[in-house]
Image (cartoon, rainbow, N blue to C red; front, top):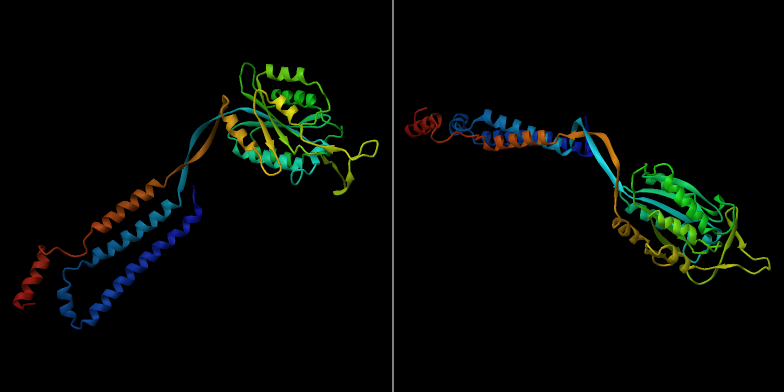
Amino acid sequence: MNWLHPILLWLVLAAPLVAGLYLWASGRRRATARKLGDRTLVQRLSRSVRPAVRRWKGYLGTAGVLLVALSLAGPRFGTALREVKREGIDLVIALDVSLSMTAEDVAPNRLERARNEIKKLIETLRGDRVGLVLFAGDAFIQTPLTTDYGALRLFLDVADPSLIPTPGTDFGEALRVSMRAFEGPGAAEEGETRTRALLFVSDGENHVADVDDILAEARSRNIVMFAAGVGETDGVPIPLFRNGRQVGFKMDSEGTVVTTRLEEDALKDLATDGTYFRIARTSSSLSQLGAALERLDRTEFGAEEFEEYEERYQWPLAVALLLILVETALPDRRRTGDPASRSTVVSDATGTP
């Protein structure tokens, strides 16, 4: 047995409080009766009062409040087998971690901003399996398809240029590795059809010109392509860091500072069958991807069975309401038609005890 809202168990303290109020009211009545003086007269005048019923009303009211407090805490005991069907799509996120992604035309830099926007996107997903591919001059699968979004966030946090020593940006290799991610662990079984989507997050600088063939292959596999461009179209230098400190900017062989800018055309070419999003200095449209994914056909991944505690708050609540109704309905005085009340009235009228 456990409790759905254990913090509400402190409400059981209301029961002794109610009991104390009943005792206080009883004491007040006795004190008032003593002030009237003549004990025999007081007893005769209060003969219609039913002390035993008053005590039972106190017991019932206290028990009712106690049971209401217990029902609010949500008692749960006994288990039932639940089946949950999982539906969604397979989404692979290809994140550019090349050196140009450290440019600071968006704060704090392109890569950090992209990671934050992807995390916000993950929070909007429901049941989709997500994989992560990192690429620069080479590419590798950082996280296979998974519904463990917590682990995915951890791998996003460590994504940086040091993970791929090969310089440059190769869109073709990123596409090839991303397609392999759809076939890796957690992929669709033979004969199973799943909706697939690929999100390309980059500044658009592609150092390998021809990606048409691999792009056509991706589309032949019914992979819906989305792209998100990070940065601004104005050229900015690429900072260089050593031991966490900036030591200058990247320069070419002639000693000229290398600049980088957002190349939107290359990314828009990737997303001709999907949507292109922009992550700019002061705004981001990547949050709209969640709605775009919702419009895709969602496939069933299977079902999971798990044991769940049965909610039992109804029983103490029902008994509590019954006790409170009985307490309210019980009269603590005899009706005027009762023989005992009638004899009191007659004796008072005739003056006989």
